Image (tube, rainbow, N blue to C red; front, side, top):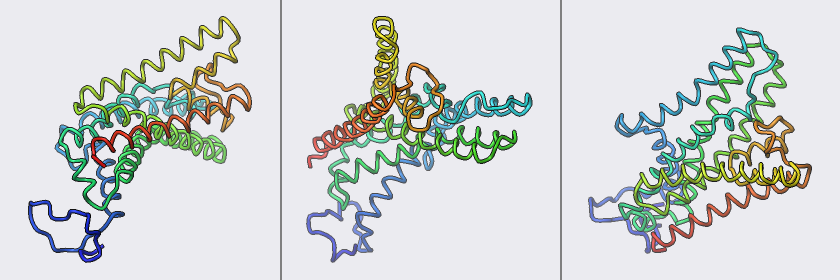
Length: 297
């Protein structure tokens, strides 16, 4: 978009240095914000101290996968001890730590520095800003989860497991990784958008994931004792990780990491799917409403 094509309501000269060059428009601004969020999640383009925590977590999340494939190859196991869909659920704490550390970085700083109205005075809209943040951080979380899942896949090929089966299982693992990434990202960003302090945001996000996991497991146990295990499994939807674990069992027909998250038939699968969609849509709606307030739009 050139200067003559730009809408009159858009502020281009914000008082620093006058610029007469071409205006690249809304699409370019959206893509730049998305890429900046993705790079920022791993500390890229930032001083070294910002890279330490995300890359330490990447290493910690990947090392168990390396150990698993090494053991599988050396001991000639028939299958991997953990499947591509079970691995992210089994080590969910590290995913929670990663997303809890990155979500406040993505939005809290903009709120604290009061730059949201400045963003929205440019070609991008409030919706663009929220979607760029969600997609950028979700892509980072997906890369975080997909890395050890892909290490498992490479190890399975080195162990000479059936290629066709492993390819489909790996793609299924990536599909569930994508669903989990979007779910935990939207929840974390919605929580982080309510505080200007990153420390409070990290604590609130971690507390939410730990609390939902604890409540979900307690309710499953209590209902299973009082009624049947089938009724208890519906409370797995309260925990994002058990929810995706159950969806993997329902959609892909794989063995879940926790037997308590196995949906009961078609009704259970429908309930789990509906909860996933509603949770993501609800978190995005909260983000839109929150940034309408802080952005004054």
